[in-house]
Length: 282
Image (cartoon, rainbow, N blue to C red; front, side, top):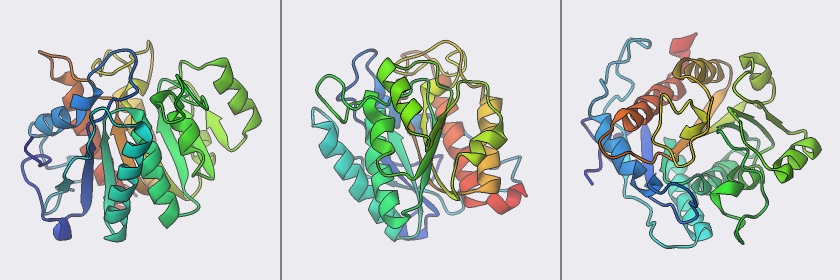
C-alpha cells in the first residue's frame, strides 16, 4: 500500500493531521471486507480535489502524514485497540489531529482511551446504524458489537445518531445512562450539540449513512443519514465545539465499485478541514 492521502504525504513533523490505518476485522460476523477499508480509502483519495470550495483553500497544507498501519490479522481485538491507543497518543503528544481509519468499529475504543488521557472531559459523537452497546458479544467485550459501550467508559458525555438497530440490552443501557443520548435519522443539530461537551471526538461507522449512498459497509441497514444531513451536523459541531480527533470505520469495499471509498475519502477530507480550520466556518 502506498501510504499517502490525496496525492502527497507530509513528513510527520510538518503534518497538521496524522492518519493511523487499522486494517482489522477480527470480530466481524456478517459481511467481511473491513480489513481492506483503509487501503481502499487511500486509493480513492487520489480522486479527491485538494481545494475545498466551501473553505476556499486547501486544508491539507503541506500534506497529512500517514502512519504505518497497525497490525491486524487474527489478533485479539483488545490487543489491536491497545496498539491504536499507542498510535493516537503519539499523534496527540506531537500536537496533531489524530484520524483513525478502520477496519472494524472495535478499534475506536483504543483511540478514545488515548484522547481521554490527554483530554479528560472528552465527549463522543457517534454516527452509526447500530447502538453497539452490548457489554459482551460472542465472548468478547471488545467485539465491534460492543464498540460504543467500550467508548463510553472513557467519555463523560455522548450522542449517537443514525441508529436504526439495537438489542434489548442496548435499549436498557440507554434507559439507565442519561449521559448518552441516541437518535435515529431524524434529529435536530441543536439537541445533539446540547448532549455534547466542549471537546468532542467523532466516531463514524459508515453504515450510519444511507446504504444507497455508501453501500460498501459490513452491515448495511435501511434508512440512515444522507451526505447532506451528516455534513450539516459535522459542520455545526466544528463551529460550536472543539473536535479533538475522529475515526472512520467499517468501510468494506465492493469489487468493481468505487462509490463507497470515494464517499469515505471525501468525508475524511471534509471533516479534517472542519476540525483544523473551524474559524473559517464562522
